Amino acid sequence: TSIIVPLRERRRDWFFVIVFGIFAAASFVMDSVQLISRPGPDSDYVIARLVYQTYGATVDPIVVASPRFLQVTGGGASALFFGACYLVLVYAFVRGRDWIRLPAVFFAGMMVMALAVYLSAGVFGDASLFQLACGQAYNGFDYTFTNMAKAITLNLVHPFVALLLVARMWRPDPFTRRVSAPASGP
Image (cartoon, rainbow, N blue to C red; front, side, top):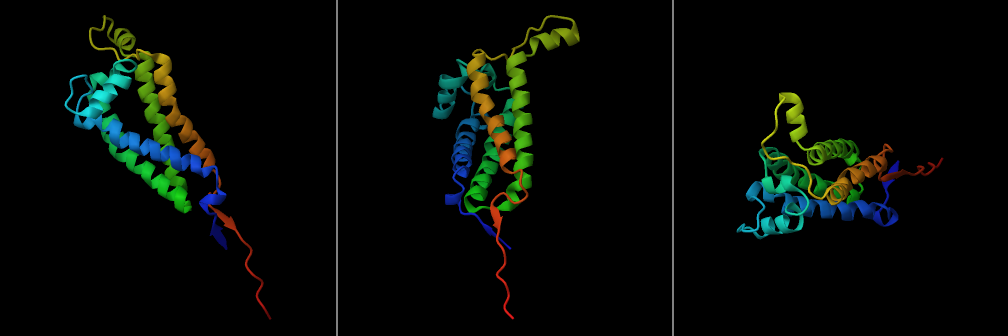
């Protein structure tokens, strides 16, 4: 038989509980801006102003431009789906639920892929690709990060934690321990 190892004996799992709690809050609060409003200095929504002042205006013009792909991925997927997934992960880590193993690995893969797409847009922009594909200068908005180091540092946290999650879920029963059954009497 097996027993659930209590969280107090899985001290390293506190890292995941805390980080996923922070990620959930950020998803529901900060990423929801893309669903509700456009980040800007004059927005009626206080969180939209905060996102603009602390991140969009100085680091990441994609957030300020709020193109449709970001409204769908950053607003819809991150604010609603990823935020809920983080809460499920917190629950599973606190309660020691082994059923989270496969969903956690899939979730980590989605997180790495989503951030790879987002970082690619911010690092490489669209102008050079457009010119290469169409043979003419690009006159539209280019999404290149304005503060590359800060944008990459802030955004690489998610795929890094996702890879740590995969490593944590590597064993078939990440939260349980086998115990030998008591010997049966004569």
